[in-house]
Image 1: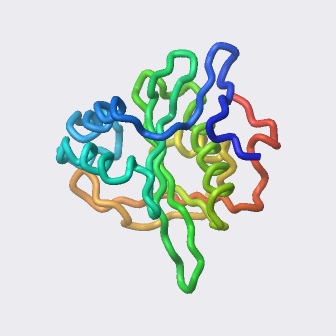
Image 2: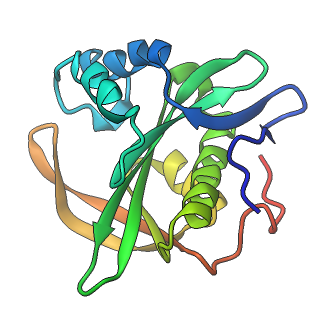
Length: 191
């Protein structure tokens, strides 16, 4: 069952949903590009703060090969962060989605991340024929590893020297979720 646009409870007082990017969200996108450390380990240096507005004007961040959706805290109608998806292709015709997430610091550690990533998987499996969704994370990002596992992903292994960060090449962990894997909603995952 697709849950996009539907509130998913996090706690009795807190629910989230995914929605398209709107003009006011661009302020958050700009912050991610110019505030060191705001996105944690993924900070890649200062970037063009006006690029998000240009991309939004192009397609509202709903491109055919990639996109962004806002993770919204329903009760406050505020953006807690965003999820992203980018298409990829393995040998032959097998295509997949690579997903990512970034939450603003006040919303981290509250169970929002795994739910948002599970919602994004529901959305992509419902609206595209992809069989596979994958996500990479840093070996030291234990919270994201747990979030991916709660969202129904399985660890596949280490991708060696796949990222240049903080002056050196670093390894990443690769996780995947297949269309036929059990849904975290069916498994009764909580917290």
